[in-house]
Length: 477
Ligand SMILES: *[C@@H]1O[C@H](CO)[C@@H](O)[C@H](O)[C@H]1NC(C)=O
Image: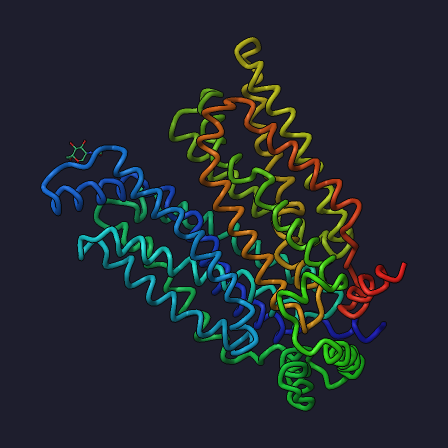
């Protein structure tokens, strides 16, 4: 297919990728990490507000509970937003939804920035819910838009950009939240206010990009407009082959006029890729990555790093995550999604065993705690190789236009739910299992590895039509 090679990463396509990904994944990553560094000053704020309002000092537990609600309500917002993705993506289009989604950012930023002035931690909590809604919608909308506007041979690399921006913005949030930057008693609301910058960026750039040609053709039925949009992205009017491919997707969509939840479950052509999408999403969250990052500070400290060096070690881990995601972006079109996902999950699984051994034996052999640091870094490297980025866009690759939005909705909602559950259950688990906590993830990783090996098809260099036909053929075998 020589036409694909000659029309690739045009200036227009790059611009659209930046417009869609920077403004959106920023919210997802930044607000994931933003609560860590200024934790102490926010707890002080909760304490002071509570004391002033009720004329009595809150117990430590009360402050912790309020803080935890503020942290975790982000994931609840994410879940709800994800569930709404299908509806908005089909009603307002991919581009329209992304633009409208910024309304939520303005509401959230307003509530969070003024919470201190208004002496209300409730505003902070509600603001975090709204930014969660926004992020939940982004996590489905952006990969959908990116995959739909990219040429086949670039889809994986472009899809990886969503996770790349997440890793970068997590690091930014950790730096911005430092006491030396904005994480002070006086300035912390501005740390939350930063979310406005990407929203403004997106409002300035996204209107210049066309709607996804697939959406224009298949949902709106406008041939010419779709061709015009595709021409914009490809920088050439030679888009006939791709238009043909989209048309055949359109014809396939007509056979199943309205894909419902019921249809997703009863029709094996849709159920198989749905199960794959859900399991792959679960493999990202239940791999234990957040647990490892949480545990890392403790591991660094037990290896003798003091608080400050442990902090730099955490920032270092964030940087490694970014670098490795870039490597994965390059590899994903060469090695393929399935291979990278298998390597990542397998590597993580082996590392959980080695890490557990080191932690269990460290009292006998002190230098093992240094080895633990290497395992934790290796864990992050393996995560970034595949499980970090691939799930976000794999789901949109596995479905044709008719079912893509609803499948994305379900899969992304599962991702946020798993994120929420791991966040809530991790601390109680460590109290029960101590140094052996990671063995739980060993079991999960083994199951996910086997599932991926047996069920996940390679989607590299295949058109959406070719991928969906894999599942159609399977039922007749
Ligand atoms: C709340 O603030 C007061 C006064 O600064 C302090 O004495 C108390 O220990 C704080 N309580 C908590 C739970 O942080």
